[in-house]
Image (cartoon, rainbow, N blue to C red; front, side):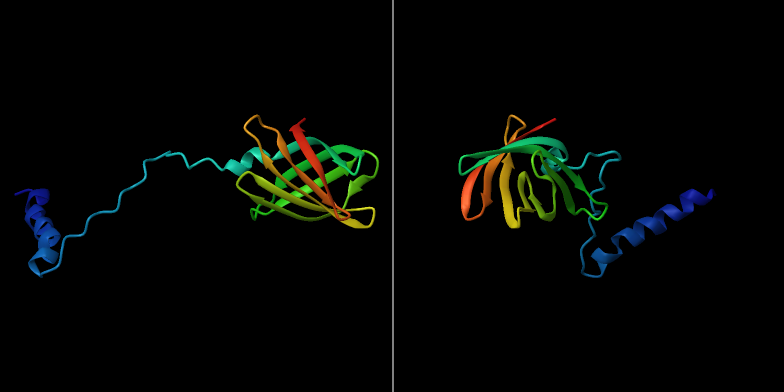
Length: 140
């Protein structure tokens, strides 16, 4: 008698043991297919180099912004204004395709609150010095 055949009744009996004891048979958990793709992260489209323009109280501003993600998943930004140079970043928050970046500019805190648009641009508001203006950016 071969070994594999003698073990079959024992394995089958062990599989039905919970039913015999009044329990129910365990249903195996589904196994993810090898190479199954994870859902896309919508915020990933915000990563990269952006050229931005803004308007506040009749004044126009322009510059560049680099959005990156650290290994711990936190978001970071480098913001440069064409006339003021690099601005100290005080905070970056990304939720889905919405973005908030807080910077210090001319001794005041300025905030960009914007969202990624279907055409790939980012548009929203510039909040600074008690006023509200416009903000837009495109990859570049």
